[in-house]
Length: 262
Ligand SMILES: [Fe+2]
Ligand SMILES: [Fe+2]
Image (tube, protein in one colour):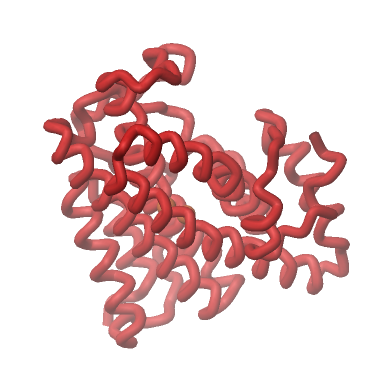
């Protein structure tokens, strides 16, 4: 039987976008069906493979999107969301493959299911781009999204603190306003995609918070306090209100985590 870590590594090193989506969903199915050996005998790559023709740019070199409802602006929005979801596939896979051995089977199951969700989100957005006459890779993409993974590769608590509990939680804060804007522009299909993503992301943040709390319990640490310390060390962006308190609390991120950190 192939080990789960080898299977994860293979998907991380798949650069073609459709092949990565397909392989991620197959990996999650194989895991659930018990077709993978629970062995961590294979290291995760430092950086996953992405489409070779992707035009990656530093954040400061990204074209300005603007808030207007121009066709160009709308295309840029869907493209940037597609990129975020594409990278999110690899973030979830790396989480499971890198930290699965120390964290156990539930953890692997949770983050492989996250990876499958992200693959679905990406596929929905790719279809959306297609309906607009575009495709993922047609526009430049932000090259900062893997840095959080690199910075936290040494410590699962730091990884959980930043990726699900800062970055994905930030998605909960900003998605409702984007959804409203898209709906106001008459794009009901786009609004539905964003609602689906928002609902799933609550679960992703919840997995992060759950496993973070369990690590804190074994280390005898106070979860909000150690989260704030890790955010200070590993996240330079600063947390921006307004926070989506109801979605955050549904994900187990109570206000005592982020109140006062702004
Ligand atoms: Fe997602
Ligand atoms: Fe997510």
